Image (cartoon, rainbow, N blue to C red; front, side, top):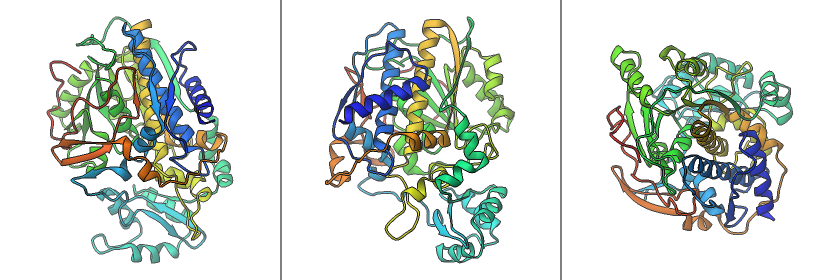
Length: 468
């Protein structure tokens, strides 16, 4: 029975989160099998969303509010995980991957590249000695067929681009990075005495928005981090996303993960940018980052330093590979981690090419687990006066998925059709947006976000007079 499996997935993840034993139950609803795969993607998805819902109830209780029993619906969860596939702007879909992103045959196997962002495309082509503007898929394919997979991985990575050799599960498990991932916990969580400092909430919690009055400084990009902060915004937090100017997010990703949030840019390399960041950090209750380990240290955002200077702060960091092993400083994305860790060769297509999970499930699951970590950290802050740091990684989520019991999740119906009831439409600055409804609901809501997504970088980098 699906509910029994989902209970098991939630229990396991809740243990990794160090959640309290007497936490509220979660009510499951909806069908199974909407994320079909050789891996138990649906169970991971339901468990991760269930953990975020349960953690929201913990925060509500810590703030003196009864949020009731949360409901996690299989249709909504699957739609949320497939958001990039289902979203429409004025009826039009957006491509998930750029022409030079994907699997490519090499002399001895396969590689996967990621060139969705212009700067990553430029680095990929520069590393391979290809002309930038004129190179298409055929030229890239011809070049890669002449090289070995590991040579491509090393050459492109050393140039700051993103590519990985496609490995089997056994090869990944024997690789130094695979061993480092296997030796690490799913979530590294540490607590400390938060002291008397830190900003007070600027509004009271409600049963619908238990994070109301709390400020979240969002330094994340792509999917996993923005999914986490979108969840916090759903629950009433004032979420302000900050990006460097000139590095615009892919619009479809921003619209999918932007509801409820504001978006601004800051150049942290300038004195004015650093000063504004310091002001924002001083007013924040939560910091969420999604950059490579060590890359934000120059801006005073190293988690260990923050634990000293802002012990009250709830901090969550997430990255691709984890903070141990030879890949720790590498860039990476969900698709790249799938290819490196053996998932692509377990999901091979009928034509023999490597495959993928039915959604960017590592991103989404890690995002919901990050949200759960933050919510539990906030609950501890209210109950115990502690600060918290949680560290998560896509590769560790992939390791957990691979270790979960396999299930038969085949369905007869087209999942896209089955997910229609889980979609909604809202108006935003970009047009009429069709997107998934929230993946979970507390007893009294919420059913949607308090504001639609704004244009990327269009807001002022400042906290408002109130949150929620």
